[in-house]
Length: 204
Image (cartoon, rainbow, N blue to C red; front, top):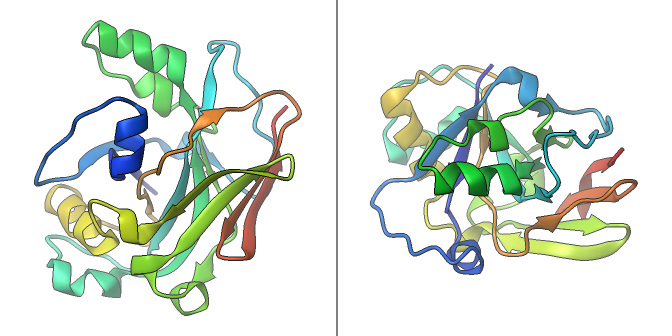
């Protein structure tokens, strides 16, 4: 199982991070399978970061084998979606970027890819215009809509499949909108697609 993630996929987030970005292709990075956090298990704050941020995203699960997938056929390669958190050690990421070094240690560490329960595309609604949001301790902290993506889910799947064979069970984190921020000890995170709560866990 592979975990793919897309960076800089919402103009609102790019603006909040003070990034100017123009590209025909998505920004792609990966996380190992040890990054996966599921089943409502708690996220334990690691001792290597003092600035752990949440990034709420739509997550797509690949349902069939595919390579060099045409964008017009990409919707055939996934049946389920959920909401997830791309945890980011922002202080480590900043240091690595300043030094011109890769920043996997800030994005791909153990349990950095939290996912909720999956629902079918039919239950979720039109994937091209899905509302999703994150509450922390009962307060709304981040909201997005997939209509605001720079690269659509189908474009992302097609692009990834040029380089990597997609297999059943692979996950794609599709990018985060504006509103990212820190998590603290004992925070309670709840993630939604529309009004459906799919993600529910605590920070320890």
